[in-house]
Length: 388
Image (cartoon, rainbow, N blue to C red; front, side):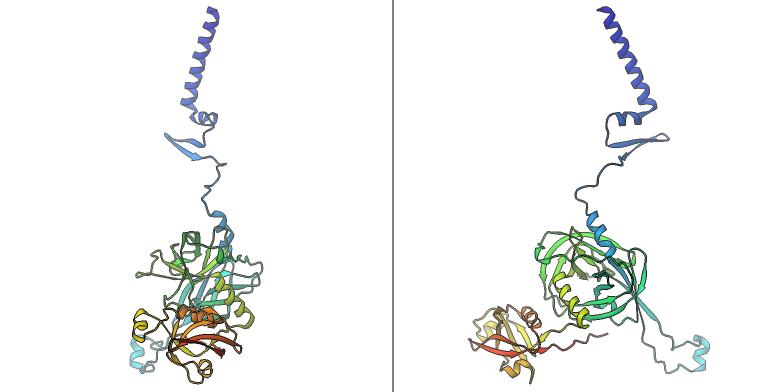
């Protein structure tokens, strides 16, 4: 028995000695033996730790969504010639002597940048109208480094959308998402080229849906997000956590030009309708009746003794326009279009725009607090010329 304890004591002593030597000379061996999740590395006299190569990313990572959508988002570079300065002393030798032969006669090229989204392998790219509007040259830079000259297929200034096209093979088209499944609070990613620094991904949530009355576009139904959107992001993609397109980033609310956490994107439902119309016909055709509407305010309702609190007041009617020919008068209140209720002027414009020119539509109006129905032959909405 005594001999057994002696052998045991000697074995323990030798084991402790070996452990001391290993931990002193080879400390990384102990990390491997203990199954540590970190790798301890001795660099000179400083001991540091690194993650094991097999460690998986956090479950909250959106890398897969970004990886799926980023190849479809492109950078757009546009140039246009500035207006030539008409100088009365253009050919005066005295001024040329001091300012050179190009005095008063040079034209400068103005450059700007934005983003776009590949929506078809055939080369169709969605962007904002204000990104490519009045551009003399449009160049598209793909995420894989390829570059190509683009041409404008068509534009819709009233939603600030445009479709351009490039002739490049094997384009990675984005997948369109479903806006009806989106809710406030859902995480989203914004992809674009802010300030020209290169493709950038920012994260936020859906802050609001159906934003309008912002004065940005004629037809407004914006997704509001707090994902950082800055100059250069215009025309870029707002995607969900699966990498599907939810909207086209369009505008920011800012007093400084930088992101304040209030950005607006055109929803994919509007994008799809406008895109298909432009690709098919080169333009967007909307219904029109020739009236000037006005929202019903509590003050107006009290002043005119109106019993209706919703709808749109017809403040003016274009002579010989569709509404005038149907008997609509200034002061009428438009309550419904094809039995769809009109809550305000924005809803009225959207409902009329969806009507097909040449067809008749049923309008429910209130005149002197009495409801009646008129049939209006829908006209074609005139093109809006934006100031350059």
